[in-house]
Figure: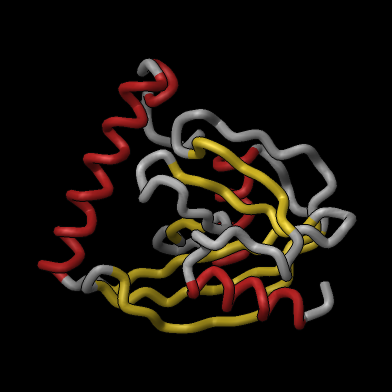
Length: 162
């Protein structure tokens, strides 16, 4: 679960609704203020090489992504990647290697994204709040609703041979 103060005290349905509203506000804020952000994306693969994909409760229904998140001020991207995996799916990576860095436009903001390839051995669990569902998919058989940016990040991680 995200480390939002008192979030665990809210009923899950209310937490999901607030996340959807916060996402809309955040996107508008970024479009207006155009801040410089830092983010991370984690391509987590199991022993079979399958990629962990998540469906967020606050994004388009049916769209599958890889775990992502923001890098806090003063935080190293690798620390943020480990934190996001723990928060979103409850696992720690066995290995974690940066495979790509790029600048993207994120709803008007400039976001420097560090992409990590990770090997995991635990059993991830959707928190039922931020993450509505998770599944493993073969890297060459991703769901059709996977955005192009996630496909690109997955291809870079697979090419790294981790």
